Structures are given as C-alpha cells and as structure tokens.
Length: 193
Image (cartoon, rainbow, N blue to C red):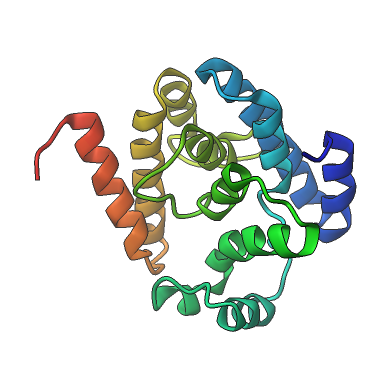
C-alpha cells in the first residue's frame, strides 16, 4: 500500500490547489469516520487522498478513457461526463499506478453515485466527500451529525440532498443515485418492496 506521502506526491500535480485541499480534508474526515466505525483508518485516509485522481481531467478525456475501456454503465454517463471521474479514476489508479487494493478502487469508483452494495469504506468515502470542512450546502450540519451516528442513515440523507440539489439546479439525476437512495431508504426505514 502507498504511504500517505507517496499518495500526496502522486495526487498533487493532478489537482488544482483547491481540489488538493479538498482531497486532504476528505482524507482527514475519512480517517475519523473509519476510526469511529472500526474500519482501517490508514486505508480510509489513503482513499480520501486518491478519490479525485481523475477529477481534473477534461470531459473529452474522461469520455475517451471510458469509451476505450468500456466503463460506461448507463447512457447518462455520457451526458454528464464529470460523473465519470470516479470510475475513470479507479481504472487509472489500477492501470497507471498498479494499485491493486480492490477495496480502495471500489471506494473511489463509488464515491459520486454510490452503489447498491457498498462496503463501510465505500460509505465513508462517499460521505467524507460530502461533509469535509470546505463544503457548504443546506443541511450540511445535519448530514454531519447523522453520518457520525449511522452510516446508512447518512447515506440516505446524503443521497436525498444530492437529488434535491439536482432538482433545484435542473440537472440530470443519474438513475443509479435514485436506485441507491431507494435501497438505503429500505435499509433505514425497513420498508419492504
């Protein structure tokens, strides 16, 4: 596994200074959440640093890599190319850096849309990305409180916040976000199908 210093050295030239600060803050929050939930804190920290590995890439480059390597999972992926930074990032971490830790790669891949089957690390990175100190949106303090109490409830509230934001901004909502929200609604509220 990479050291923290190696990870920072890898990510630093790929990101703007603002995005680098974001990644470092995500790493700190991820470590704290991991400690809180009994997950490997160093793995969470490393994943937090690397989660936006492909974030600074142009839409055309993300689309090209996704097309060439069959990374599309839904037609919406091509309509909102920025969402591809997560699966493309995981792919590049594996192919460019030789990173073979499937837990880290999966958490990077799932940090924007979530997934129907998420590990604790997946949830931690998804939520740390939303609640790091540089973020500011309605409901943030409530999301922080919920996240530190229960990851599944945090996921539900975080996904619903994302959906509300997309609706308010008249943005496309990825179908996976809706599926994952409904999954966590059933998990948290114990609702049958």
